[in-house]
Length: 390
Image (cartoon, rainbow, N blue to C red; front, side):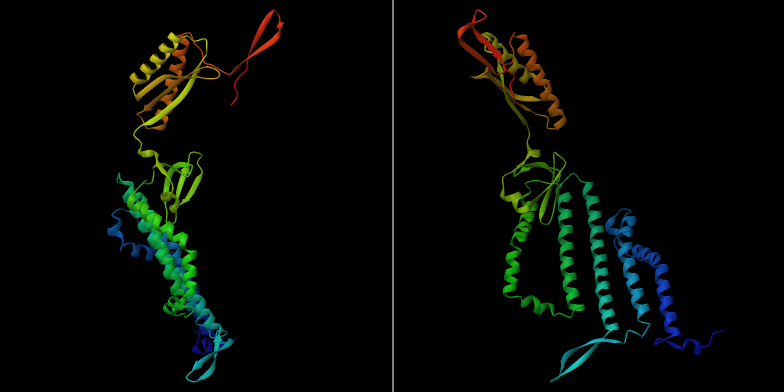
């Protein structure tokens, strides 16, 4: 058996016992950090079990395993390194500090620097865990919101998630200043002075967007999932965030609009319309007589009004165009589903073509009539038709 004299031997400023403790603690932490992190995650989940009301333990553990594992690793490294004296006691530099009425040179050792570094990283890990808990709470709230028909809660949960995470980040930042860098946070905040005014001016737009987000939640001009059009951007609202709103356009791109722009500009909520209007003009050839025009207009209007899924249809002889007789047609589609809307519009367009053809007319297209002073093939006039180009 090894006696105590062996463990008391000193090598490079440290005893064998210190090296053994260093290696044992480090090895224990590396081997069991995953097991301990999962165990702590499951124990911590019991605090939120009644809140979740569902089996969300796997999601909770998945969110917390990594930050808790990191915290355990940092604590293990800190405890193992502090078993050694050398070279932790070696002074790196000195700084002057007023003690009473005299200034004294205070040494800063390697161990002091390591303590600060580990304190910094441990505080970051703790706030990382808090942020993951907020993620879990929002995960549960989103699950509960998905069970309701109200879309307002689907919109509110992501916003509150970003709001609380931002507050936690600010608290974490000032905690680091206070504990790691020994800054008097209260004095720092009260002493900002002109710098604080400059920061407030720089954050003016962010504050306006934040106020805009609250306005959206209170006034509710739209909710997540609505089809909106603002500043020439049309798409489906996917997320209302802390600063901006994300819209998925018809081209499947993601448009990010500041919340201030969502409430200051003219916003159309297309999802709130109860009808979809279709309006267009067709041109009949000038060879169409008045009776045929009357019949075409009457049949189109009658068909549109009698058809299922349409309302308030009208057709009228609008004007004499450059290339034909302009017939104005308009109607409303009562079915809001886009696929059904396209189908109804297509069927009506095809029926209009049949009505025009049945009445021995045709659709006009741009033509030119050339008049020559000399006979051309015993004709004084030649008509040339040109296809219309858009």
